[in-house]
Length: 124
Image 1 (tube, rainbow, N blue to C red):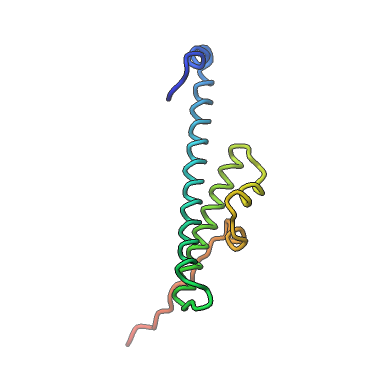
Image 2 (image 1 turned 45 degrees about the vertical axis):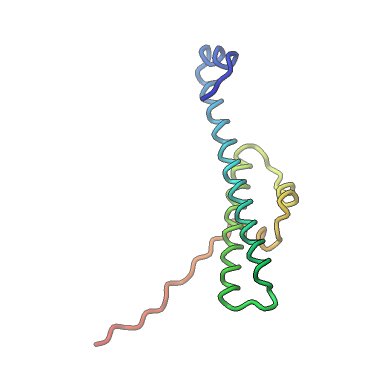
């Protein structure tokens, strides 16, 4: 923990201030990490779209793109939740600043579970 002199003196008087300072640092650090993860997921999606035009996409490419959109949606959800934990409630600015595709916005927080693969009954 890096405290300046004034903060250290205040922290000695009120130990809870040191804890508050440490919590604020961790919240900001987590917000930065999650913002970076969001940026990376959006870059991967953009790169995939540049390399694979939608008009000529194959089923496996469409599945890969869906997976990338899902990852970006989860990263967006994590980032928005952390921002709200920091007291930043308006998410509209994020959508503009990061130029988030509507599809990613719609996937925010959605959890996709796939049914287990069908198994054939054992041979008897």
